[in-house]
Image (tube, rainbow, N blue to C red):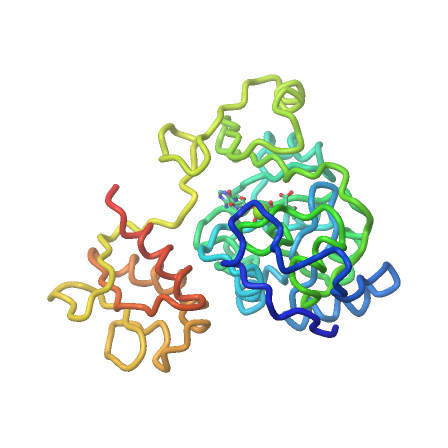
Amino acid sequence: MPVKLDVLAPQLSNGRQQNPFITADMPTGTAYTRSDIPHLAALLRQGEVVAFPTETVYGLGADATNSDAVLRIYETKGRPRFNPLIVHVADLAMAEQLAEFSPLARKLAGFWPGPLTLVLPRKPDAGLSDIATAGLDTVGIRIPNHPLAQELIRAAGRPLAAPSANPSGRLSPTTAAQVLKGFGGRVPVLDGGAADAGVESTILAVTGDTVTQLRAGALPRDAIEALIGRPVAIAEDGGPVTAPGMLASHYAPNARLRIHVEHPEPGEAYLAFGDRPGTLNLSPTGDLREAARNLFAMLHQLDAAAERIAVAPIPDNGLGEAINDRLKRAAAPR
Ligand code: TXA
Ligand code: MG
């Protein structure tokens, strides 16, 4: 895929406007079609990102079992924080390998394939990357209702983590051309026509008997309530955990966490970075990708062993910004 544009920098965008440097007649590469699915599936298995159509918006997909592949999503989007990503599967059997389905969750899965994401307890041995789930013990999962999406996932033989296929801060794309333009032709795109919905999936957390809407989306709440015969609670987007059944959207350790620490205090487990000794080290060579890959696993490990954790300063460039964002949230007082 030839690189036609280098001017695309996410920070050029003001959040809602098309990058002014990109005009409709600029060449930005060609999209792939159905017969290219075996090739695209091979790229996904090798850890590359591939954009694909769904009925809501185009997704920027990567193998959800491969942390390096998932990190590439963040690098490609220029997304400065690790949100838990939606994991896309081809069928219910694949979903059941990754998550625990209560009878209520199974009922809600009646909307699949479709624009509904269910946040369910994650099966610990399913091999999901903890970057995909941002260190949570739940997973957001959905079966998209687009034949090419299902075909691509089946061909890859992997669950695909996929946020919308736009650079951070830009509008979610509903056509392959928008994706090509958005990334300046740098990302292979499977063309499946215009997305039907144009808005993202509705996200529901299912905990016990409670169903909580974490994000309004393409599946209306009254349709959900009609199916399950009970009201759906509404969580404030990004708001605090206010009621039982509402989920934290970021990983929070039990231990007290201090960040930007050069010299740990006695009794603190020290999560080091680079050339300094620690209880554990995110990356002795100072490699931010390695640090991102290790972040959640090492925090979990230290949390199980210590009451207090101190984390070394992490540079704020590249993936460091997302690492620092997660650390700041994990360190926030509760
Ligand atoms: O329609 C869609 O849902 C599109 C297409 C591509 O499928 N995807 C999408 O993904 O919108 P994304 O990454 O923009 O949405 C991810 C959001 C997170 O910000 C978070 O709110 C929620 O999904 N989420 C995912 N997993 C979660 C979890 N385990 N716990 C809580 N929230 C979760
Ligand atoms: Mg998005």
